[in-house]
Amino acid sequence: MLAAVMKGVGQVVLEEVPEPVVQKPTDVIIKVTATAICTSDVHIVDGYFPPSPPFILGHEFIGVVRAAGSAVTRFKEGDRVAVPPLPFCGACDNCREGNLGQCMHAAPFGSGATWGNIPGGLADYVRVPHADSCMMEIPAALSDEQALFVGDMLTTGYFAADNCAMKPGDTLAVFGAGPVGLCAVHAARLSGPSRVILIDILQNRLELGLKMGATDIINAAEEDVLPKIMELTNGRGVSAAIEAVGHPATVGAAVQSLGAGGVLSVVGLFPGNIDFPIQTLLMKNASMKIGLASLDNMRRLMTLVEAGKLDATPLITHRMPLADFEKAYTIFEKKEENVVKVLLEP
Ligand code: NAD
Ligand code: ZN
Image (cartoon, rainbow, N blue to C red; front, top):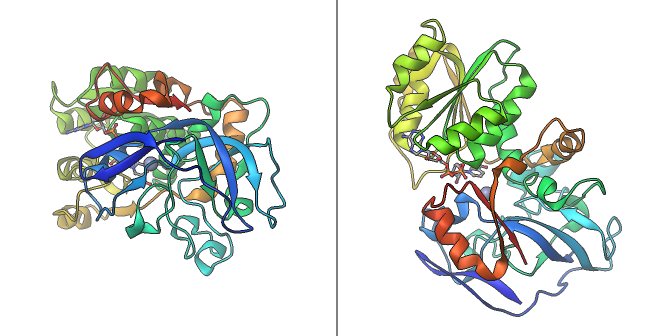
């Protein structure tokens, strides 16, 4: 089968690899029907985390069950399924306390031996461990496009917005109008904010943000961000700010943008630890939430997509066969052709 393999820092190629097989009774093998490159994949390839190549990349995919281990009871061949970025076991202490993303018996797909060595989903087929626990069926009414982002982009955007604990009428600033920031903007609407201010340096992404729920946009390449946010919030600063870039400068700006008692919600990934303006946060009596997306929201999000309350399909700017992975990776990584997300079809 074809798979995107990380070979070394800065190096990812599409190549022929053996198809996965059921290894444990709790495994399923799925035929991937739609998959996408996540910016976290780009960070992995760039060496943000200690890499251990070679391994198959990818943690954002959906598919159809092709084979199931003897202990799998919830799924059978032919079922359409959505898969989270990390195949949690559902049984360890962390999972039982609802912290599925910190499962003690699983690791993220497509991150190499340092992180548990579970081959990823930028491939024709993928082995899903703990399938009964972590997979969910895709409602028949939903297309692959509608279901694909439930596992990562929508989950992360919702997590970022939910962490802001907004009340109706609150104001929100979202730094970064990439797929994650756009999904945060989109999910934030569920809390009834009076203003959602989206900040980026790419005009096409900001304009997409207006369609997905932003009330105001600021192009940081053309305008001073903080005075504009103060003007839009009557000098108070925002009730909450989401950092969805992964850069020290936008963390700083997000903290600056907060009003008294505000909440900083960080989902951007960083190349390592950074200087953090803890004093500014303290002086505002502000608080911070940060982390990897909480995977227990997938079912809720699938329901919201099915009900037409959330729709992440506008993120898809490109559709390509998996065979064109290398071209897709370059376009995505370099943000060419006004790309937001590339849907890859194996
Ligand atoms: P992305 O690179 O597409 O988006 C980042 C955006 O920030 C881009 O649109 C870029 O133009 C913008 N930007 C750059 N400099 C800026 C500045 N100075 N001011 C304002 N905007 C600026 O990435 P994405 O796919 O949206 O992901 C965002 C981050 O979230 C990444 O770091 C990714 O790894 C991370 N992520 C985290 C989780 C999690 O669970 N916490 C899950 C998925 C992704
Ligand atoms: Zn991701």
